[in-house]
Picture 1: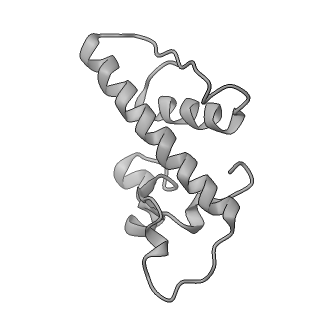
Picture 2 (picture 1 turned 120 degrees about the horizontal axis):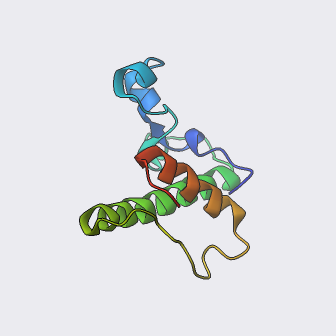
Length: 108
């Protein structure tokens, strides 16, 4: 996953809104609008396993972050702590969670 490029298989918000997405929405353009969205057209070109793994990692870490952020906001929590086997020796996931925390203004 760390060697893949999820933007080759995900439809990003830049794909939808163009290069001005940062100015229009205040979000980085490489965020997935539709995970695996570029796999739908047929026939589609073969995609590298690393790109598919990168997209899956983005989807999982975004979901983790959305759930954690929602519960954090609801409970008034000021910091998030992530633990467990999923993150042990898994630097790509740690980096993705840190990235999404920063996007939503959470401290992790």
